[in-house]
Length: 463
Ligand code: FAD
Ligand code: SF4
Image (tube, rainbow, N blue to C red; front, side):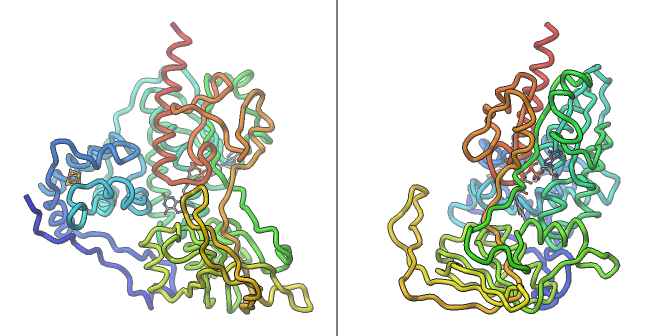
């Protein structure tokens, strides 16, 4: 049963060209490429890919529709389980999820499930989209806090069940990390993110922007005074961490979140926008995750020579292989086994260099990874004008502090059971606000589970 057709490669922008623009790196499959790739799927009787997908898309079913050329039907199959397929097809870490479980990956290359999902979603958007069935209103109102993937997935499942859903979003544009974090060159905002959010709106979901839960509205008031039957919190984990080293408050030091938000949400990369952004000629990004890769690749496109400083080796980099590969192709430098100890300033209080120390790997820590240990006397300086800290994020404590009876753990994450129920009856939560920084599809999966639990909770109260 060996499948002899090799995985169909996907076309991408030339690295030298794309390092100077913000256009999408990956072009995706055309019709012929998609059908050829789809023909590789074995249509397994017990497809492991489906259970490895956090929203359980019927993967072999949609792929067989692609192979037949029935693209609209393929889109309808995906739409049963995902409201954001063009987004997930682009940014999901498929290699550790659906594709990581594909049987063809055991001896060769798995089916390119993500690229096929993207193809179907793009084709469908360009050809009128999936016709959504409207359901009669059931007379119940649900509030959703946050319009990231968790909130959008929860809202769309509830709307499909007839709920009157309002999303309250703190920022001026919905989408969460999809709009403020992930750069345009990986995920186009107007063409892809806005279009998929409009599909959620088309289900009847209302989105109120510039509303901060815990400040503009309180969750207690939504439940007790404004007639909402339940609330879902999908407020993410947007609070950046810093190292606590001397010099972190100098001009020219910022978090990856701030740097990316200015660029992505406030369009600092465009000449017709006034948002200030400082990159300078040299940029150091501290960290080794996907966010660090995004910040570095953005700084590079703004014209800076960019170095990623990471305290372990390339083998331990938490970023996706694909992102590291793209970053290297574009010319990002990597300083491995290196850790900043101080940020140095010029006479005006601006960053001029980062003092670093060399590291070596010692014994494994509780995560199983070998701990980085400083090499005494190995300090050296890297000249730079900007330092971007990309060390992870945690949930903002505002909602937990202003909502009665809502328990959080010591990392500030809201405590919720596997269906999203929190310690406060009627309040559900999911996504990064519960798990800490994770992935788009895990946030969507949590949003969907919570929608089912909210439905059960509201139905249960009526009995
Ligand atoms: P978010 O997307 O953070 O959305 C939360 C929303 O709630 C935000 O819009 C926020 O403004 C709003 N909010 C917060 N507080 C309030 C409040 N008090 N009132 C009202 N609204 C509020 N994952 C991947 O799978 N693949 C990737 O390639 C990838 N790349 C990433 C790159 C970057 C730069 C970052 C930062 C993350 C990346 N992730 C990636 C992670 C992924 O984006 C997140 O795990 C996911 O977006 C979490 O979804 P969420 O809905 O829980 O939260
Ligand atoms: Fe197709 Fe791979 Fe899923 Fe099997 S595991 S159904 S081959 S995508």
